Amino acid sequence: MKKALISIIVIVLLAGAGFGVWGYLKAQNIKKQGEDLRQITSDTLSLKSIEPNDVEVSLEEWKNLSENSSSIRNEMSKISNIPSGLESNLSQFYSDKSQGKYKEAQYLQILLDGQRKLDLQAKTENKKSKGQIETILNELREIQNQINQSNLSLGPEFDLLMKELQQEADSFLSETAKVAEGMNYESPAIQLNAAGLDKTIDELKTAVTKSLNDWVSLQDKIKDEIGKLSTANWVNPLSK
Image (cartoon, rainbow, N blue to C red; front, top):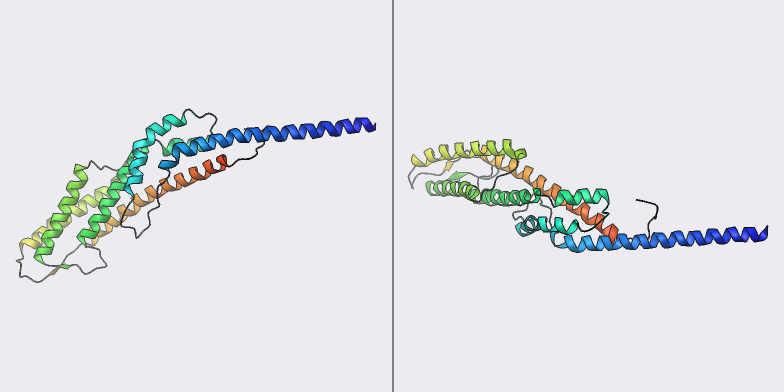
């Protein structure tokens, strides 16, 4: 009876040890998988969140993601058994949508630069001389040309906001041009009605910023998931 009990204990200990080794070896495979993914993706997982008061967008990081997504997808296809949740996130992040995100980042930078150059924020004094008004009109036309020449279209989710912005910009151009025509360079400064234009720019900026920051959040989730894989020391070998 005693020998039988000892035998059972030995078998249990051996089984436990074997289970532990099995889990360790499986963890090593997972760790290598994580390290491989980290090496493949590290150069493109560097997007930065955009804060409300930012005046610059890190365009190089968005451009880098856009240009390298296709090759990274090819590299990832060589790695087998990526956890389904992580695989889904990677497929989304490195999809063709990344090219659209780069366009969004460029568009946002133009809006930020344009709003600063136009200096028409509702919270500031908008009295402008004839010369200042002519400069504003030229700047606004240049912004429109820059968007058109750069082929910076946004996704359909922005259609309504873009239509409203275009209408406000056209209206502002027309009304302000008439104001300038009725002035000479000695005329007193005139208060411009730019509240509608400023509001629509802010609304589009907010929407595009949210869209880009959602992509940054997806990136951070991917980084966290890859980090967990690359630091695995033991896993339940019976888990999928």
